[in-house]
Length: 279
Image 1 (tube, rainbow, N blue to C red):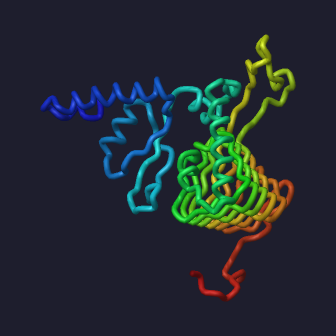
Image 2: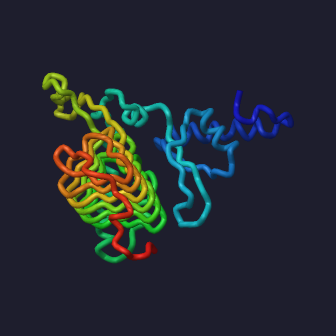
């Protein structure tokens, strides 16, 4: 059954057929693996779910900052889905190598636009999974793929942050991140026999096992300079991570945490207010 099978006038089934064909062409010819759907069109969401796509992120605004919510969807099959699944996958896949090269080129173009004071938001919307309204990413940021990084509204990232986004890296709203912070989702085999890259006769990569674990950073969290967050970690809403910390375990909401490895120190309470009215 397709998403529109309850219609009986025949026209919807024809439209459905053509949509299927167009979607298959986009996937086959152009490697399409993500798309946006108007949240107010649940039939469209159902159609894409039926065709093997899944919702991975919701934004309250479109890329132009207008109050039109959309659902970002990604394919549930193919090498990119394998990469984000948490299972071991083949990271030497040529399609993924091409994705990494594309991301490097786009982020270099973004740096050039940033230093030229030309904005560059359109570039970020093209490379990242989502980049929220009134958020700022300063120069020097690096990504593996980009399309697995989802940034909420009014976030700020200081210089030289790194996002190794084999799995989703999701930031809520009003997150602040200091310079040279790293968000690292890849996990490599522990045994060296499993970890060594195997090459083809011509020297090109043939096999490299890897898996990834997602990272979630809650709204209004603050990460100070040089923080590293490893795969599988959730940082709760309103948490503060001290400079130089290595976060390998979940951090509760509204908690100050620091150290290597990072550990909760104490709760953040009203006693920590400095007396200024929040804007």
